[in-house]
Image (tube, rainbow, N blue to C red; front, top):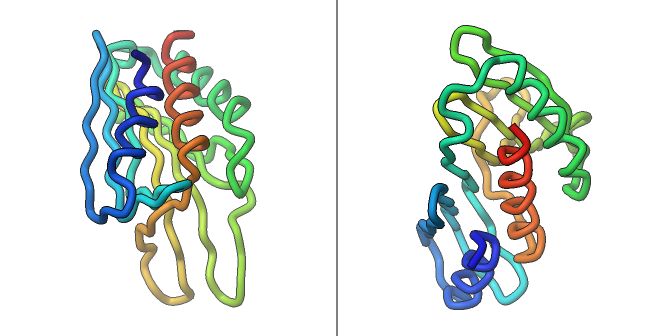
Length: 159
């Protein structure tokens, strides 16, 4: 059973629960979803991440290409995603909402990160004027959460 199918089943089983940590695995990858709340149609996820061996020793150039591929795939969130920063020393690429969601004085945005060593991660942040950014739950339907997992897997399989 694919990781996305496992996640769909697990989310269905957790409906109505709060503060849940879901950890699922297949033959070579591990998926983690830190859920603030699980509802019948959606999940408020603090973090959705995939640990995978395909990224263990990847070159920075390949990581940049994978981030571009992931941005093309993930075109269904509230805001479009674009590569923002490459860390050559840490060998990671950070992508964010571009542009971020703005309302009143707040900015909210998704952050996706691909890191050598084996991790693809999605989380959401809020930035208020004069304050440091804070991590907030990303509200995702079950369908979108599962689609993200499929897109994470398809991206790393392309390396």
